[in-house]
Amino acid sequence: MTATPPLAPEDVRKVACIGAGVIGGGWVAHFLARGYDVTAWDPADDAEEKLRRLVSAAWPALEQMGLAEGASQDRLTVTPTLAEAVADADFVQESAPEKLELKRSLLAELTDATRDGVIIASSTSGYPMSDMHSDGADNGRLVVGHPFNPPYLIPLVEVVGGEKTDRAAVEWASRFYDVAGKSVITMDRELPGFIANRLQEALWREALHMVANGEASVQDIDDSITEGPGLRWAFMGPLLTFALAGGEGGMGHMLDHFGPSLKSPWTRLEAPELTRELRDAMVEGCEAEAGERTYADLVAERDQGVINVLRATGRLGGAE
Image (cartoon, rainbow, N blue to C red; front, side, top):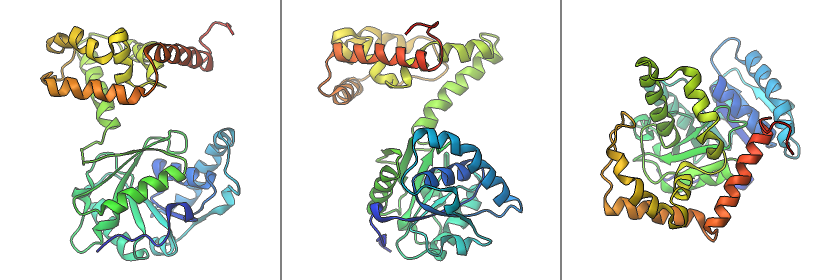
């Protein structure tokens, strides 16, 4: 069945959130702050009490960020059944626990309970959508919409479909999240763990190795990020940061100079072969990301960004 949403992303007014734990509740807070009517359902007996407490706790931060016109906690309705929650929904965000069979059955149930064409997104943190497709379900409108915790503060959402997902559904979901105030990465292909979680996982595993082997303490590892590369990663990702390490020669010079270190035992991860194709892809990607900004522009942007982060976190020693 072809996914044909009943509304354009810009016309969505009512969002249903299925699952109201930390992630689902964070989504509820985000959508309320963006001015949507939100219906929520969770099977736990105390779900509504916990959800409203979570939203209330998040609201001061959302007020600081700026509420959309009409945003109100009063626009939240918690329903006794899943069917009631999604009956009139224009979009559905599923945030059930990370159990594959639960996800499969729940998503199939949601395709039966929602109006034809309504896009249903899963907050799964690692399962490919293809693994969550079910026989007999309207799989064409199922997408992954993977947020970062807490969803009401961290802008990123990674969007990707499965083998049976219509490309139009992926494009619609990406546009909807953009309209709803998120920073969207639309992935071209499925990848377990998606992009950001795989990068986090690599750092996490190496940290565990270092602690297990007595090579660094937990404090050392945390300080190495917050006082080091994390300051730059807050506004300029690791690849463009590495490109600046190549000076005016950019990523090409950096790879030519430091490429041999990929064979050094700096991490337990196995490095890919630095082929000409990989080198060119990295160089071209950095050039595209930099756009019209020169090396000097990027250096100035980086320097000011670090100063801004240090100032925001109170680490400039009183300097203005």
